[in-house]
Length: 171
Image 1 (cartoon, rainbow, N blue to C red):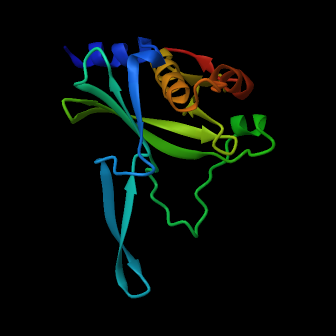
Image 2: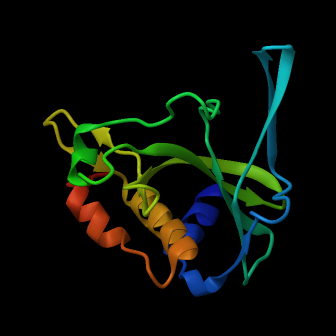
Image 3: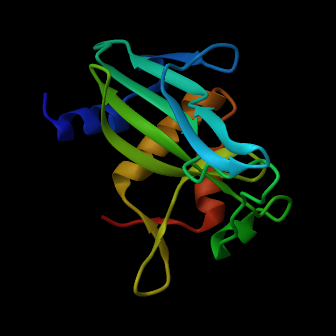
């Protein structure tokens, strides 16, 4: 199987094709560590994906998501604002998280996602087109929609949030 086939399998799959494993109460085995200057020398910081999923038809294919790529300490602001996030007036700030596609345990693709409206939905991180529209690829739309449905099913409101944000699909 080549990389494009793997990515297409993810984007075209149904949530029922995946076995999800929440990692809040145990390790994800995909940890990130770094050292930052602290009050008493270097401080070790740890992050891990909070969700994993295995593709039932081929368990060599797996997903993991939840690490904040900015890895900002909790006492600092980690929220971003964008013109499109004003569509969610109750919580217009959003955070970035990473979603990883793994095959046989090897990271083969990494996608950034936006966790929006007070962590109520994941959306793809859009690009601004030359005409000023916020666009995403079809693959990003389908992949992030899958992640949102895996984590929030049956309560996923991805389609409504995508529409409210005013995103368009452009490949």
